[in-house]
Length: 257
Length: 310
Image (cartoon, rainbow over all chains, first blue to last red; front, side, top):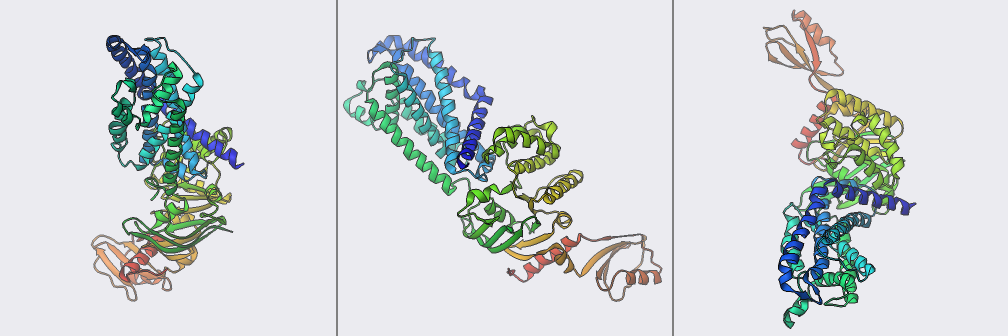
């Protein structure tokens, strides 16, 4: 009885979240498609042809998995951070807080919404990339596991950001000053093997390197790091961030007085 | 059975403001209960704690015997909250808002849709079911929050200033609706600034001031305490001063007289003395609503004596 009640609550939050990003599709689904098309045209077709091969593939083939992953990361994060902060701002988060569902259901519902948007964006960007390159798929299961774990990780991170945020500016600080630099330096546009040994070592402290490379391994079968390391790091980060989010919501940080 | 049982409830906010200084409050099942107090008295904090939007500092709260510390799910399931501020997503339709709220309580979607039709119709919002919430008038938004709070069919409904900013016609239809659902067995707790509303609807009442309960009794018993009422008498223009032996009275201007009438004396003597002086009374009214008069006196008394006692 309790289980089915929680399932209904989880399903409700998830549907509400999906309805939200689908309702504003011009803001949520179209921009990544346009941005990625520009990346493909500029970095892939124009500059890429002069770069030549990377990791045994054309530059365009090499960057496609990284660009898809970049869209997944930014969209999963921004979906949950903006949705949860809006719920706080309009106070409709109170609709959830007065209801008899456990706090982990609230977190799973919002994270599920972020994952759904990220997967949809991933499919759209992959589809766009097909206009520029023959997309190879080495192992679809690896692709699915990596994208799922990455999307859930950054959705949870977006939720934590929104919990602490007091203004709309606060939810753009982390994406601008942390997420974007880490993503650009996370091996989206280059192989770590091009870097001097010291910078290769520094880069491996960047968790996004493992996500991009795990994802690239699923498409191309090549990676700068082992896939098992990528999965372990993704799992560890997911567990840590979910625990942090759960503690924050339980304590009512930013949502209860 | 007690619908709500609050014992020794205290709340100190960050920064040291003590909003509740240890209140005890009991509401019986099926009651229509008013919680009154001036702004900042602690009404919304009390409601916030009962509906788990505010963390308490000390004390215990039980809802239909379910402790909010150990049986939170059962306690929450029993409560429907109509908050003071509009707190729904302004971009969602009425149907989405009420059906989602039912979903958060575990009500399956098909059942939720049936209930949505029932409550939106009862609250005269069915025609607007596909409109976005931001398109509604203030009165419609208030009624939407009542419909939303009823979607999981709670045993107790808590309404924080439900008729604020609502015109008199809609207010009266809301009163009628609340009376009806109370008659069906739903316990209702109401805070309001319209004391006429509390007097008309509620059987029992608590007055809270400066974080303490200063009165907790039946409406009848409370109103019985009011032994002096002030009446305003409209006299012909240019009436000279009048004399009323045995009464406190004031000439406000040359055609308005205010008289404080103790219950045991009654009004007949006022009219007899005015008739003897050839003063015609054109009309007469209460200076204030009875409860309002009592409420103001109690709060004023609290101000002059400093700390009030629970």
